[in-house]
Each structure stands twice: as structure tokens, then as C-alpha cells.
Length: 564
Picture 1 (cartoon, rainbow, N blue to C red):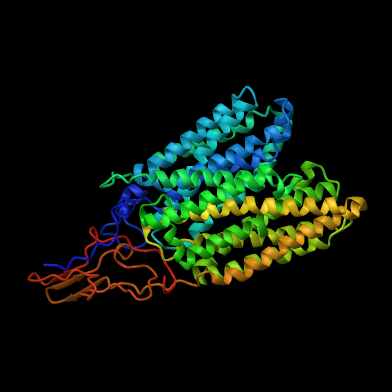
Picture 2: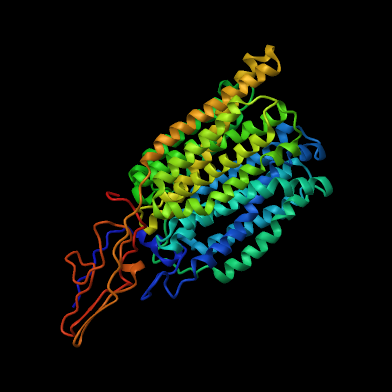
């Protein structure tokens, strides 16, 4: 007779914890992985190839708008919707990714989303006017909106709470390669080929990614019960995100936030978002996104910092190209090449930041990353049209190094201390915070810059330099604020002691199951025990055998700091 471990999860969480959530259960395995599951590296390889299509498409499009406007004979304001429509569709789909994964399984969801992105890419290359291109880009955005959080979720679940920093470095690799290679590839295509080829670049990544996903991703298992879609939450959340992003995008115009097409969507979006928060807190784990996860310090601190990084880190990407072109007289190609060192610096810090996040924790890596970003922005606030270009490129390399150190710890922190079923919801929260922060940061710095240019217009070039200096100082201030907030990130997770492999006494045998299924990882008060009072082990009776069974037990939580 054995004592059963109590089950506390709701039916929705049980469904999410099933293999349909994206990974197979580890049963009777030892070492780093269950024998029945593919290695994390194989899963990562399959996912990265597919998501590269999304990343390259986004970065290539950033340099293609002028060409599209000319070839399709429409204004820049019209062709801008090729990007805006994609971003809005992506934002509206991200919150659905958790339900889609629970309902259909991680493998099927990933292959469906990648197929949708492939279809959108092919149709975009065949577009006959601006309107059709915008529509097909929206289709791409739907596929990308499912893929981005799903990649993060599947990798974290496959890792089983181990080496989160290195896993985060893997997840962040495509986002770092995109800014380095995307503009260069886009420039080559637009210089020597037709604009339609910028969409055919995605096809090889999608086709190979689908094949690898079919072969390497874990097989989905049908959940015991079908999770219900939170219709009310969907009706409230999806339009709120679209309205907020649309308003923030429109606020970058001449009138800033005072423009009707800026403040009105932002107001409507804020009201709908507040209504969703009230609804989600009442629904708990049955909501479209479980906002109760924000009670975890790791989740709220990482989400807040991802939002701030939109201003301190990524909003400034609006300023740098304009600064280089307007004040230093560079053309578009020269400005793009000038920014390459920042991408290289980001790539260089990826592995180091991941390892440090595992060894010393996310807190101090995040503090150092934001501090480096802030300090490396200061030279631009003092630079003039004659400042040495090699010096500024070196500063960009250092700044990129700091950017890479920001992404890794925030991704690691957002999953620490969470149960496996919570991972998809944390992915949605952090992804949404990052997206809103990026749009908000771009809008805020655009308004500050425009205001400065208007105020100092009579001073000519020196007035424009003053306006850019002011915008850079605002970015530095937000980086300083983020540096202080990074102190709230969780520190180094405490690892649980290894469980004994075997205890033998005469004919009495005690067997302990795989550490990644019965041991709660990094929970300071728990260890793997035989015959523990809280029923972490099953105690055998007449046959004198004590076993720690695996299959009936709920999943182990990911590493988390004490008290979470």
C-alpha cells in the first residue's frame, strides 16, 4: 500500500501539463533528460530554423518600405500598413498561443503556425497591389504571433527547468542574428532583384523548419479534457492590444499623443485592458491569460523590465538611424552598416549572459546589462557632427554587449519558480510586455524628438543636435530607472541536493526516480526523500520495497527563489 500524493491543479492545468502541452512526460529516466524525450538541442534546432523566417522577414521589411511605396505607386503612409498590419495581427494572436497549444498540442500548433507563415509569405510575393500585400502580411502576422511565444514555451518545457540561462541564449539567437543579417540581405535583394524576392527568402526556412519539426519535436498526446477558450477574455484582450499599439504607432506623428488617431485608440485600449484584468483575476487559471502569475516577483519584475527596455534599449533604435542620416549626413546603406557593431556586440554577449544567469542569477546580469546600455548611450548625447566615427562604432559595440545581457536574464527570470502549466502564460505576459514596451518607447522618444525639433527649428543644425541630445538623455534616464528595477529580479536559484541513486540493505531496496520528475527543482525547502511525511515518496509495505513512482505525480516547478 502506498500513500498518494495530493492533486491540486485544476483540469485546465492538468491538460496543460500533459504531453499535449509540447513535451512528453519523463518517466523512469535518470540524468539530464528522459529517455523518451528528444534532446533539448534537437528541439531547439527545429524551432530556431522555423523562427528565423519570422525574424528575417521583420528586419528585411524595415528597409523595403520606400521601394514598396515607389513600385506599388502609393504613399508612405499607406505602405506603412504593410508593417503596422503585421504587428497588429501578431499582437492579437500572441494571447491565443497558450490555448492553441493546450487544445491541439505543441507540435501541431507549431507546424500549423509555420505553415500559415509560409502561405502568407508566398501570397505576399504574388501581391498585385498595396491592399492585397497588406492583407497577406496580416496572415503572416497571425502565424508569427503563434510561433514567437510558442517557441519560448516549448524550449523551456523541454529543458525541464535546467540550464535556463543557456536555453534563453538559444531562444534569443534568432533575434540577435536578424538585425545583423536582415538589413544586409534586404539591401542586396532590393538592389539587384525585384522586391517580391524578399518574401521568398522565408520559404527555405519554413520548408526545412516544417520537416525538422515533423521529425524532431515530441509527439503530441491528446489531453484528457478539451480546454475551453475564454471567449469574453479574448473579446476584451485582443482588441485592447490592437488599439493600444495602433494609438502608440499613430502618436509618432507631428501632433504626438494629442492627435485624435493616437489618444482615442489608446483610451479605448486602456479601458478594454482594464476590463480584461478584472475579468481575468475573477477567472483565475481559466482565463485566456492567467494574470495571477504576476504575483510572482520573477514574473512581474521581468515583465516590467521588458516594458522599460522598449524605451531604454529598443526605442532608441528610432533615434540612431535618424541621427546618423540627419546630423551626420549618411545615406540609408551607410547608416545600416554603421549600426552593425551593435548587433555584433549583442551576439558576443549571448553565451556569457546565459551562463552567468545560470551561475549567479538573473539579478546582477540584468543590472549590469542595463547599466552598460545607459552608459554606452551617454556619448551620443554629447556627440557632434565631427565626433570620430570609429569611436561611436566602438561605443555601439559596447552598447550591443549590454543589450545582449538584458535579454537573457529577463527571459530566465520570467520562468523561475513556475509550474510547467504556467510557462505558456508567462510567455504571453512577457512577450506582450516587450511588444507594448517597444511601441511605447518608440512613440515616447518620437514625441520628445519632434517636440525638440519644433522648439529649436530656428537654430538650424545646432537646434536639431539639441533635440537629439534631449531624446538621448531621456533614453539614458529610462535605462537608469531600469537598472534600479533590475535589483528586484530573483537571484541565483538554489539547487536541490541530488537524490540517492540506490539504498541497499540485505533484500530491502529503495529506488528513487528520475530527478527531473520527482524532485522539485530549486525549491529550497524540498529534497528527494523516501517516506517523507508530505508524501513525496511512496512507501512500500510487505514486499519491503520503497519506490518513488513517477507517472501519477504532478510536474516539477522550474527553479525559483525562496518564497515564490
